[in-house]
Image (cartoon, rainbow, N blue to C red; front, side, top):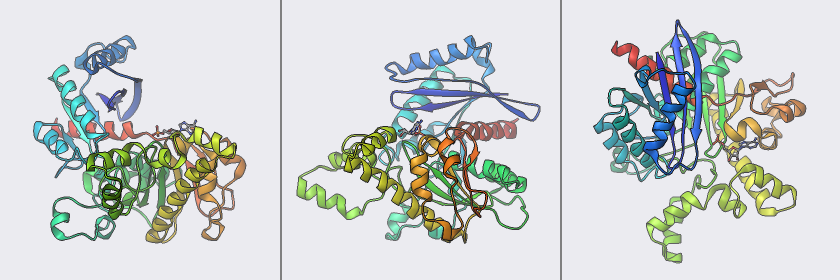
Length: 395
Ligand code: AMP
């Protein structure tokens, strides 16, 4: 069985093709295009690249296409992308303006280009379905709650991969199995004692922290929209809701203008005064630029605030995991986050931290009670596995 996972941006298309055979799984091909002007052509070019690379002979060899979809009203988990599901995604376009519209457009184009191939979406909110209600609830009037104003959480595919992989690395195959089966049985696969408690830090263009108990997400720093939680590259992170009305009135901004500023000119970009890539921010901070230094400090401070919350919620942790572009590659940010935590049982090994870039590594000191791990993100594999499960169930 071959499953294509497509990652859609407004001007980018990236993909990975997986083959599942005899209980094994294999990445057959990966590729992508940036600065896409003609999306239908980019899909043609993707399929041509798969044929050229020998990953498929004909398009009929692709059994399904999976998408890491973000959020839809009243829909969660891994589902077939039918017209009603796309309409439910459209209903939440305003919550995820940088994500939902390009996904909907791209999915419709894939449906037109490959009409006989089933398309599935694994929603990024799915990992938090079994989190305690108190971790998902905003203190708003009930009518708002009924309309969907709640802390949904995102980056579900990334944190689910970390839940499973960290358990394997910590010698807990029972917990890894529970994480793997989560969308099948809601976290009821039995596990041994003691509990396995992990905090996962997905730090990249978009960042979030998640607590994981025995393979199941107990909450996520992203709230109702992917603009919340930690500061992101251009997106704001947490903000007092009354700041919005205040700035609109005092600076004479429309709602659209204010939302655009929060999505495109905030986060690390707003803090640093123009840079949104952590590498550029660190170079400027090293040259003595105070705003660049502040951007780093805020990212680190906010990450620690969420880590602290989950540390208490979980009653200490066995492992802290770093993943995604910054988490996998940036010793300075990891060091800032792990500073001064010896009383919580966490000690980084400076040399291991410095050399860990983009590969699976332990970076804590041998005497550290909490293991600190770097695990490269593998969200597409999680999508492909869930799509396979759907195809198996339908067979
Ligand atoms: P992601 O959203 O996971 O693709 O992460 C993208 C972000 O990761 C970029 O904006 C950079 O800030 C950061 N990043 C990517 N590669 C590196 C690297 N080699 N060193 C430090 N940061 C990196």
